[in-house]
Image 1: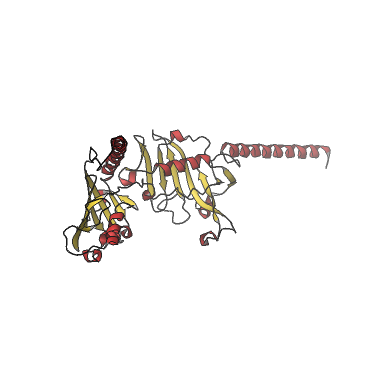
Image 2: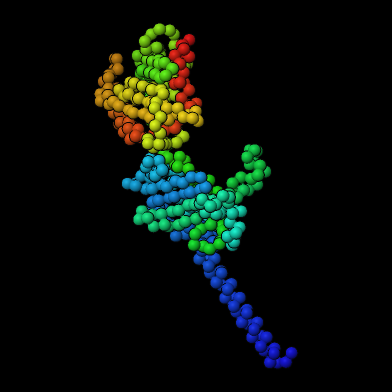
Length: 369
């Protein structure tokens, strides 16, 4: 090789090396700008105060959560109030999420990590699409939540921890190319089922004075003269099993629901009607319609007005009256607030598991001793 050939070879090496170095710095800059640096926030530009809309979609369900008049609501449940704690918890997790792993994964491999955007044409490998927007409708961030990463924990004795415990989540953020990151939180609450996001506060019937159940299988009514008095059949005739009466009474003070349905989604008529009159002058009317699943569609109404004045206790001392009057006023204020919330909730229908209603579904003969 002569001198001229050597110089041309060195020039070629320098050109190729410079091009390679330029590509390296380009990729490194894109990597840094994407927020994919290990330890970096997943969404560095996101502010909690800007978030006013969340949409989640998977292969079988979709939910849209919207902040309206300072209240989060579930659009697919007729605007039913959403669970603020669950929503704020998810937003905070997204803000706190840090990248623990980052790599470029070709689109052809996204299905293996459940990172394909859900759609009609996607049969396998779809993740959960999460869109975050503001009050003006602008999309602040969009991503696909993919496979949950597991961490071995040999000290965990639970059977479902045999393959590992959830420790992270693969995520593909829109606008960052094929860069797939893993964050240190599995984000398990980020689900697309509307029923998972509704607020769980429910009506509560307590201090019942008279309870009546009527339906296709007959009817019965029980009553008591005082709050801590003995339950009896309201119309007489037979001895009442005290434990059965207490179970029926307690069932209405601890009901919960599994989902909310919009009224026009079901035309089922009540097969059972429950009427509960309380010592607070409130009357709850509850209709139950059976579903094919065995659970019930429940609708309720609450009417009445709590007493405005306290009935003095026998032999009440003057020095006790002020304290008792204050307690009565505070209790009445809390009761009025609760009733106001219950009346607002009564415009929807609810799915209630049958096992919760079992004490109220019993026939009269099952309540008798």
